[in-house]
Amino acid sequence: MQENICSIPINDVFMPRDGCPMCRMRDMLERRKAEYITGSAMMEPNVRVRTNQEGFCYRHFAMMIKLGKRLSNALILESHLEEVMGKLSLTNPRGKFDKKRLEQLDNMSRDCFICRDIKDNMENMVRIVHAMWISEPEFRQLYSEQPYICLEHYILLLSVDQKGLGKNFDAFYQETFALTVEYLMELRDDVHHFSAMFDYRNEGADWGNSRDSIERSVEFLTGEKIISEDIEE
Image (cartoon, rainbow, N blue to C red; front, side, top):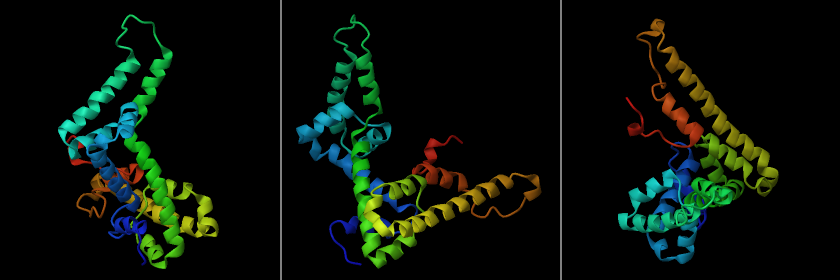
């Protein structure tokens, strides 16, 4: 398989054949961006302007706090909180209700600098996946050997740049559909088996692969792994 600066990251995330490869790709891009934001980007005014205006979602705030230094996060938050104060007009507490500022706050609360960046980067990565799938038989084989494609990335792989696939779209669709629907059917059967095991008539029967079927189903549907500490026993 011929590798270049574009294909190496793709090969790296597809090679393990463990879970959804596009989820691994997203995780890699997120980690790199969170490290960049709390690192060298601190000295880039154009990036700071955007992070002040857009802020971050909970997921990416948590990632930045985990991966970056506390001072870096404090400085990012300090300037972002100033931006929020400006939208709230806290300097004029007796002012009249401003619907436009409320809309601006609403948009800011739903925005995230990293989410925007990851969306653009993932779409670019999908285009590279398409190109490699068309031109490299070895990658096409590797693609077919993936355990599954999660629902979110099934949609992404088939929505981005359909024209770029050209006459290969139908074959790519069939391959991607098979990876997703076969795993979906497996999940459905495992969840059904898990539920059936609570019937007294199945006492002592084999649980098979059903014990973690709830967690695997959530991961398939959302692209996110269930973290044990988030579950109350």
